Image 1 (tube, helix red, strand yellow):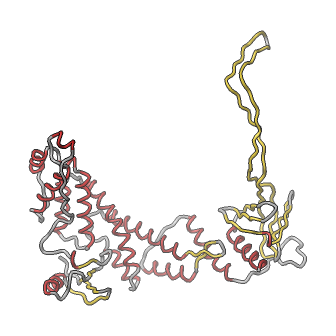
Image 2 (image 1 turned 180 degrees about the horizontal axis):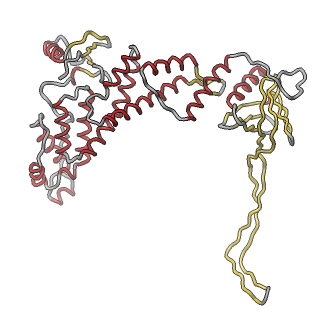
Image 3 (image 1 turned 180 degrees about the vertical axis):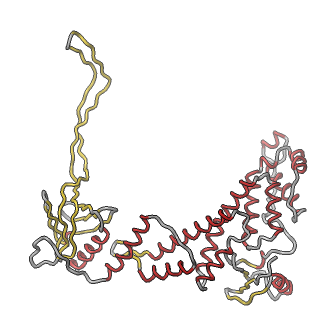
Length: 422
């Protein structure tokens, strides 16, 4: 066992740190009680002293409950499924430091129970193996005895190296996510956080590459969740406080971690940072190519106008038919034929031109069509990946397609509408 101090807490308050042997002595004397919590760097979280690894090993999965044989078992003259699990557990409990069941033992169990226990109970044996791995992983000791027990269990349960490593990987991924969160929430310097994060993967029976990949994925998951928390909804759009974002990224850099996110996510974060400032800074007028009289221009851009248009299509429907040649170009046609017209709403780009948000209204000036409506008519503004939709109380909704900057345009439009409506 490691001599690294173990931190002890009672009722949420840390009361000291001692070596493992000292903790056992204090626990035996009553100075510490089983309900006290313990933790050491590398553990995913605090555990009670009731589960502290003892000098006498016990199986890390509970004994199954006893159940009688079902009708099919009785017809086949064999013991119940549960009897197989009980026999395996009882045999393992008599050899807790080895956890080995030989092939001869399996054959004997099969003759006693009337079926191949390893084959019939495979799912539960795999579940036991994962419970054992999770139990050894939870206290982050992974002493030689625990590693030997795992290897023995894998051989006993018929798990090859690939199957055992797959179970290790799944359990470690879950453990690592919890441990990463525990470390990141601690009020300690970034460098110390990094050291404790590295301890999460120490001595885990996985390849170095698998440990590294799992920890990278766990941190990426934490990073993504943290950014979601930093995201806020304001004026119908996503915004992010640049100061909070900068503080978070600075801490990450001090930990020598380089998170990765795709171009779409990066664009989303960049937009949220820009919109934060846009939501808080005064609206300022910008130059405009249109003559607006005494109205100020607060936003303008070249866009495409989209409208929902009623489109009628002509569709032909024919049943079974045939055509018979009579003579030369003459043919006789038999069968059914029908024509039907259908009308549907279809979004179409109808024009391109200049879109302007003034102090009083929305103006679109295109080569084929022009629009002009006051902010009092605007009910809602919806942002899409390449467009904004303006819902109006009369005259139908309109959609403007943007080459870029639709999120910023929506924020400015919502602020202007709010100001106009008081």
